[in-house]
Image (spheres, one colour):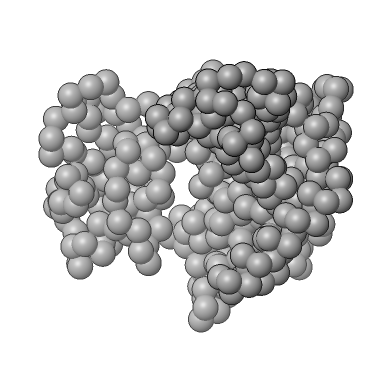
Amino acid sequence: MIGTATATGTFTWVDAVLLVVVVVLLGVSAMLALAETSLVRTSRAKALALVDDGRRGAKVLLRLTENPQGFLNPVLLMVLICQLVVATLVGILAADWFGAWGVVAATVFEIVIIFVLGEAVPKNWAVHHPERAALFSAPVVSAIVRFWPVRMVSGTLIGLANLLIGEKGQYLGSEVTESELLAMADVAVEGDVIETEERALIHSIIEFGDTVVREVMVPRPDMVTVGADQTVEAVLERALEAGYSRMPAVEQQVDDVVGIAYTKDMIRTVRAGRGADAARSHLRAARFVPETKRVSDLMREMQAHKFHLAVVVNEYGGTAGLVTLEDLIEELVGEIVDEFDVEEAPVERLGSGELRVSARLPVDEINELINADLPEGAWDTVGGLVFDLLGHVPVAGESVTVDGLRLVADRVTGRRIERVRIVPLVAPTGAEPE
């Protein structure tokens, strides 16, 4: 033992060698700690971006991020070995130099030095400079991972650990969820990386895949239809009056859609001198889709089969509404208003935090607009929510309270709510929501 070969308080060449080993191992431990933090914080997408930028070491970094377990376990093992050996050697040297009190001094020294120099400093630097740290450490870690003794020992120990806890199979890495992507977009806006409009588009694209046709369709009461037995001239007049290029043609009622009347076809027929013909003979086939169909699937179908309008049917086969390609695109980019649109604005600000909105506005849009938590259920729109909470057809001015908001049926036509006024029960203390 070194402690018996040398006198207490003397310094020999052996001690000098051990001190050099301690310093080297401490440096290796710090470098591996830096590598652990930076590589774990680097996603595969980030590594791909660095490769595209032509950064040195990016290709090695990309290979490591494709299999995090492949580098993480060996790195953790090497960090542990380095720190244990450093602690052991410092304890031996301190005991030789200072006797029994040296062990106490060595313990304090190890806690401070290993924590500060071996953990805190490199890891904090890696947090503040993740790209530089990852690109710097990737080649070193790659060499360590390829060194077969390290790979074999770490694999054996991990296999033993999996055996003890009953885990089987390979680690496949964490998957990025939709909520994480949405949160990343929000953080990017706060950091001025992207604009607010770009964030809104990202949210729309991600939510687009979960949206069903029922949420974007023109509901049955708002459909403009023509009779299949009407003359072509009458259908054309109706089309010009409504300002639509395509309209469903029905038999006796809306549930009996027999085709789609195209304004262009009607114009050609009239110009050919056949305006007195029944529209039935000049209709095109109608497309029918269930109200639960996802809008992303419907858009691909519209692109593939080249049609712009579909009739939406419910589970009983009745007509629930219609949906156009424009409705689907608006779900992505927002409302598209042309020179012929005369619709009311979906949202009107009345001051003092009050809003007047279309009863067809989806509940989730209301929640995002005013940072509320209105309940979601079998209904899709704020009008449907008012109906459900009241339990009957309201009269104009009737209201219901939910989540600190009073929802007022501002305008009711027949059995249908047209506009809803949203009144906060607590006056807003800050600026109005964007």
